[in-house]
Length: 368
Image 1 (cartoon, helix red, strand yellow):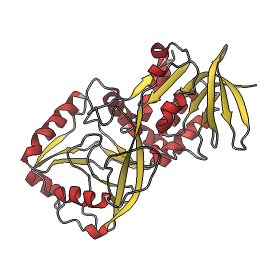
Image 2 (tube, helix red, strand yellow):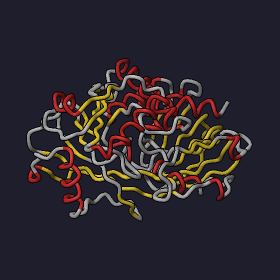
Image 3 (cartoon, rainbow, N blue to C red):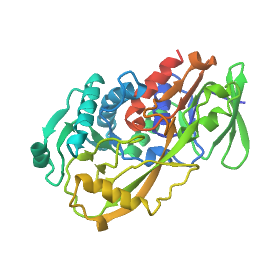
Image 4 (cartoon, rainbow, N blue to C red):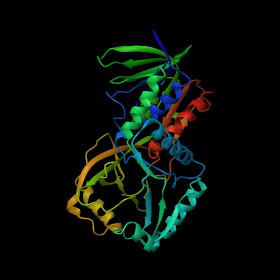
């Protein structure tokens, strides 16, 4: 029977970052995913923003990982030649009623260790982005954008250089305790099943985190949270792009508001919004467009509705939504469930991309 040091279930950006980190200490590290290639779900259907760490409570994993991960990510992109741009984000209060929210976000960011924010008056906002309507703003110069696929490719490269490997079209079926760790059953691309013994098992399967955990024999149901699917829609803008920064309104429950972002080619797009769904479905309902136009026109009155077109959607694994205004990442190690060598990650949504390179070392330390 085959035996490895580590199996990571899920080849999204977080799973790959964990695998790359683990492979520096456990060379025989295997990443499996049910899809044929890396990053086929949440990791390839997002805004590709490198977040600064403004919004999250200071004692949360999201705040800790976002701030640390941002620095690690910029360093990684420089070292591995991953395309990125420190473009900056302008967070705006459209009217005086939103000024208090903006001040709260700025105060929270300082508590999180984000010390480079610049407050802007309405005149300064207009001087920076002339087509915006805003009562005030805050500039986050350390916010950026990144080629998420290029980032994931670089992580696979790290993994493989250290002796690890990725296998796609491989479905995780079951895991049970074994004298050497875990006996893992997988379904291969040809439909056959194989069994592998691993010392360490890491569940980083994103949208499928709870389903995967239910297939790990040693876990009790009380340790597995309920995960909701929150779909976010994105619209591209085919007209002239007047912006040189990312434009963010005040956040909403479950998301950061319908914001304007740029990709590395300069294409302007808007989103995501938040819509709870029952199953994985990436369609964009026709009625979303009107809501997008109304939201965008609050801060960009001269936008041309005819230039707004549905682009793609992404789905995030939400914990506690919509009943909780904030839900943190959940990362369970041996101290939580009593099983040596097992890690479960739940609710890894935004800022998961930014946080990935900080989550990897955290997971490894939980196993020490």
